[in-house]
Length: 576
Image (cartoon, rainbow, N blue to C red):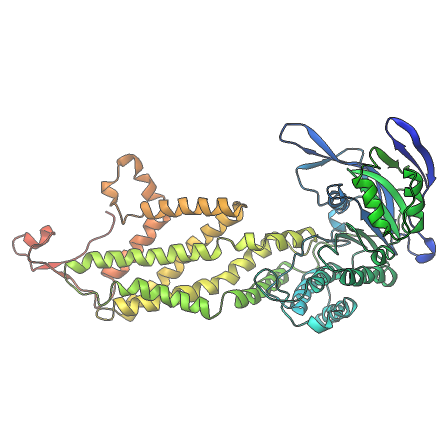
């Protein structure tokens, strides 16, 4: 193709230069291409103005090649890849003249499983082993038998050279696991599960040493040969060895395409002619390219690749078959994956000790509750303690449930691995056993300490059932808030205000009759008030051994001072 290079306001660099786009037809028989024309993107600024972050980029990439996207920091590499993968942030708007053709196809949901996207940050499941993560991905993204999925996983483990760490936790953050290079290869393998035709990699070598980076680019180059894939990688400043692995180069500067063509000597000749400078023999070519951009030697230069007649040509034939597996199987796989993660992060010795300790601390204040008048308030306080346990602990257990999974959920949804509803159902099901264990440990500890005198199996089972019902109600409300509020700090602020309201208008601190009439409706709509009333009824009025309370010598209850009193107090309803 013929491209015209211009520098605004000058004619010195108005030269024609012959570029091929880096496509070598001898390398592959399947010329399914990813073509893009006049990609222009803008983002709004706080001042109300708009900033152009992609300025009319055109070109194409083909199966059987690896194309590098280079440029200084902030030049638009990530935005360019996001535009190609239909993953732009909503704050970024594309111009109406921008066009992209995926093998002759316009973008549709059917292409989601044909276009893999490797994000700059590793988005994985730290609590899973390499084999587990790939197997769960295969069960969601691949139709077929168990044996076929296992074969695909083992094939990818071999291709990505992950055999030595296949049964090691991926890790990340506070979880010790595999190395950064291995984790990056796991991310690549996950995207390759569904055998995409196009793979977009956002700085796959970021943070890696030169040798590991060379291994990863070598793996990608091998995929173009073996699987006939079209791979586009943004890369900041590759070593000379890594650079030699690329077939073509797209160099960006401040959103403009400065060069689009073959990598290697062709690119060196172009930049030497453009800048009237010679690349020193001891220099790494990408370093020299970057030096010219940083020193403003490429300012105003913009290459224009004309749109060809075969822009929409392509051999890609994709039919939208929906999701790879059924709703039921999606739910089952996500539940199993969540449960494996839960066993690693939750069901451990610290978790059990925490719940038992909380139960003991809550119960030790009420050891050996009796049947005197003074024990009435203690029992009411005990009922409120049970409410706090069934309210606060489940909420805090699930509050960050979706925030913790937000990146992996977004990745799965964009890859069309599953529908959002099976994810929600599976997460609720996976957290339910944890809540049950939490509430059982707390209830056993507190009830044993408080009711060894007047307790009964009937009352214990009723408290346990009430804990489970009330706990699940507030866990569901906590999940709703956690799913709606995306900012962690704001989420905690909202939750604290909500908890204070729940407790303040529960009916424990101030009886409903003592609250100002205009505010009594807040008790009526407060779910905590109904939970408190339920525990009140169970603890003070349920069970064969629940006593009538003995009046004190100077009683606070009128029934004790009435004529013919039998000296006993029978509690009435909490709300009348």
